[in-house]
Amino acid sequence: MIDKNSAAARNFYREIRKFAERTKSWEIHISYETKPDEAYDLTLVSQRVYGRRDEFLTIMAAAGLDMVDQALPQKRLTLPTEAQLYAIKRSAGFESVAESRENFSPTWA
Image (tube, rainbow, N blue to C red; front, side):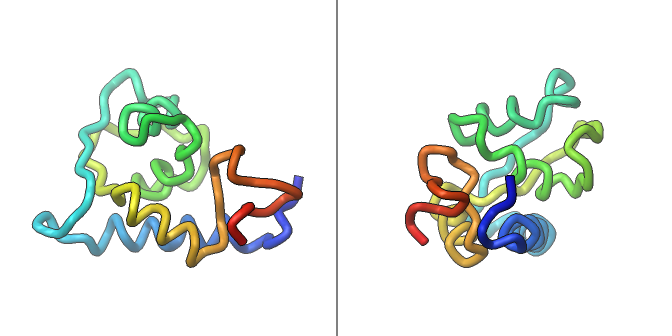
């Protein structure tokens, strides 16, 4: 299904990627070391970091992966906190949590 804002996911991915590349170690963020059992399950990383499996696109972007079935290497990821993630989602017009979506767009839009 197509989102009403077809560029939202792309914009979200780009903003998360920029966040991961530009955030310094002393700035507020979540630092996460990936594990071997997460190589082909980005939803598992999402569950361990955010407590839900919906944020796999966040993990994918932070890791610099360009396909969902691409192997996640063991590395340290720089991820946004919940508050930062929410702000990035709002600015991109993207929502990954199904309960926060209706009629192909975020309910908060």
